[in-house]
Image (cartoon, rainbow, N blue to C red; front, side, top):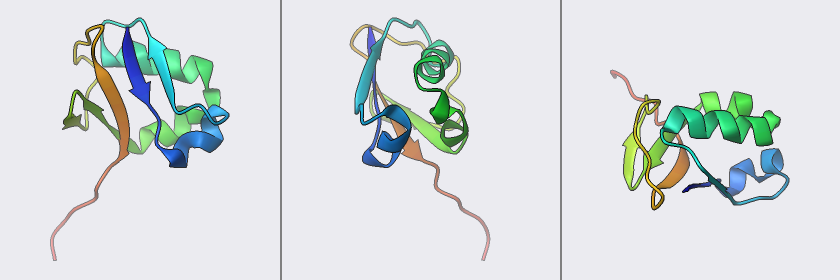
Length: 82
């Protein structure tokens, strides 16, 4: 089962939980389970990128997960031209 870790900025949406272990084969299924457990995370998740096993993805839906996968929610970094 993959483990998703929530940064301290998300504690207000998770009732203080800093992680959750979920049986999910892909990131999209994991995120649905997280929102089902913590509905208040729905909107903040839209502003987050997802790091799977140390690699950050902005569109991670179909990234496969293993029992050893570690998933972290990280703020997206905006960029642009000067």
